[in-house]
Length: 308
Ligand code: FO1
Image (tube, rainbow, N blue to C red):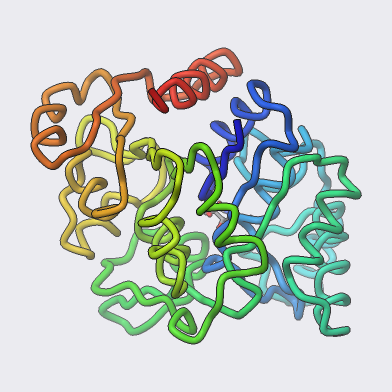
């Protein structure tokens, strides 16, 4: 069964690990958010592409949810000693990925080719595609002005009020090669339990992707990142409110309407099932919160069964 997953952030990595245990890896394509991309010390960092790649390579630092397991931070210490910004922590081995990517980008190699190079070198058989090879940057408007996503999420620890979210560059971006066919031709398209506004939103903002979702030949299923009225992790609640979305399974359904067919929600949110059915969606109850490998695989199996 060919599965295409739209992914971003830490919630996605757990489910993708579960999926990789249930599918032949060559049947899995992941379309990664690049709205979180940022420049650190002159290097191009693609956090969501790296998190997905590291997760599928079995190399992710699962405690942090980003970076490489067992990494050291000697270069970071040395940069601090030189007075450089160090609020965004780059590990020593993680740096190699950013050096490799930045050098290739300077040689005008497309991000999609670079992402495939890194995945192949790390032994990942699944296909990982950036949503676009063109620059798209999520920006957050606060009472003190606009912030880049990492300034908001990491430097300010998401503790500032969100007035608006913008996907700069999205209107002029095109889906990366392979993205539209991967959505259109999959047996199952899965929206991972990622932040609907800043992890999935940028993907949907790339012209052509929502149309592909609307004409997908397979079932389009999302896993709710909201359980019991709040985000399982991260600032999804605040960002959904900024987008006037209810922080609930219904709000997730609104964010993904009209192309979503089924929504996997936590058993605690069973009361939302009726409202979802009334909107023509198939609610699928599951244990959404993944705390270990067993629960990651259990949720992945539940999602694959949701195909009906
Ligand atoms: N998240 C943090 O909260 N603090 C960090 O210092 C940090 C560094 C970092 C380095 C590389 C990378 O790929 C991700 C990193 N992240 C960090 C996570 C990053 O903010 C992602 O955008 C989030 O995972 C949300 O997508």
